[in-house]
Amino acid sequence: MTTGSAIPMPLALIEVRQLVALIDQFLELLQDSEIGQDSALDRLTPSAYPADPEASAEFAEATAADLLDRRAADARVMRAGLQPFLEGHENERRDLLVPASEIDAWMRTLTALRLILATRLGVVRGDEHEPEDPRFGVYDWLGYRLDLLIETADALDGP
Image (cartoon, rainbow, N blue to C red):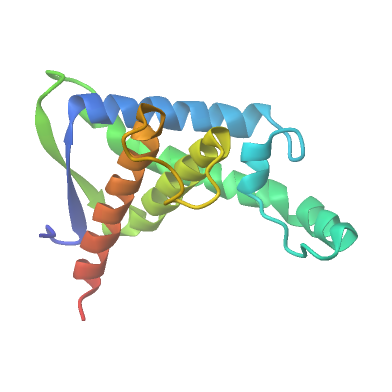
């Protein structure tokens, strides 16, 4: 299932375009929003000390910017990997090869995108929504892509 030290991810061009649009919006959110001003961004920097708001605020002040910078760097890695696949027919399927060195960045970015969407949709737990509700289509699709990437990465690592 893997090719050398890369994971094949079959995607239609329309899926690549959707991922690129989501990543671009995510990068814009990271650039334009501030901790405490957007609940979705706050979800990406969870409280380290929920029982101690003062310690939690101090910890967030010391670490949040670095954490969000790393999330942006991961998103740019994923965006760069998708860029060469933006040309062609909308329904054309291709195997995008995710290098082993970039798998973690892809997984972290897909997870962050799902967290942002979950916050916007009011999802606290992943199984708390109706799968037939069309508002959750992108959320579920990102989860599907993340699951496939995790399964394939696990197979790459072996038993």
